[in-house]
Length: 372
Image (cartoon, rainbow, N blue to C red):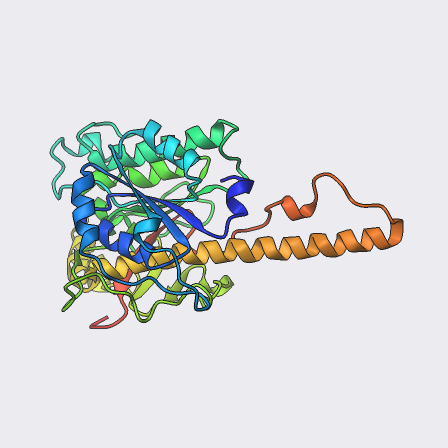
């Protein structure tokens, strides 16, 4: 968010929901990377301390050096994920560059009825919608820091990863014609479950200081045969993680997951179902496809952390390239004028399109193996 953040070789991550089924896996995946410092906001500090005391996974080494231990890179803060003031203070004091929100629970059936959570307005309309309230607090905290003039500018936005549900994704084949005012039809328009997720996309799009990704998995289960959260043998390390290219911007294959933006990947369209009127056809198509989209908590956690790493490497490479260009121009000017260049130079600017994937979009996931 600030130029100071960009000059650091480590990544400061603020994690919400670190004691949950997904959040705990994200925590371990983050701590496996020795260049990531994690600040976890939890309701019960002792619950997370107890969990970390049983975790024995070593972190990945860089160039043979002994990295800081996971405990040294983890700060536990007891508080509420809905406290935007607390989150803003942590972002400023701990130089947070990435916010990961895995907190909150969305019930299958909205207790308040769809009217309070289904219209997609920018604000959570009910305090009963815990998921939306937490996302709202995260957005407000980032806005407070970014808009204060003391903690951030729009040159490098805060990076945010949020968790929704598969039903937030668009139904394949319903993308509106370019220039049309119509919106793509989402899966939850035909299968209205987990409606507390519905306001999230509109809320995130309203944020001025946040580059966000809304990860929308279907059912998540523990990885088969895993008793503890493992290091992914297929996940790239710090030094050999590839930088995404243009063809990676919309879909890419990972070792364990296939992902796509806005729609579920590898969706099977049933023309016969589509001809059934009154929304019954799309509903049957959703039901027919849904069982194929079960993924593991561990795979989703690794997907998110790999994305954080790619973001970081992309930014570092961009800055290095800008610095080299500035240095070359600076040396050329000195040779011609024998006068040093002073003031703001191109080496201090961040410009151009971010090279990382999944910026400001919804993400659908499916297991890369199995009956797909």
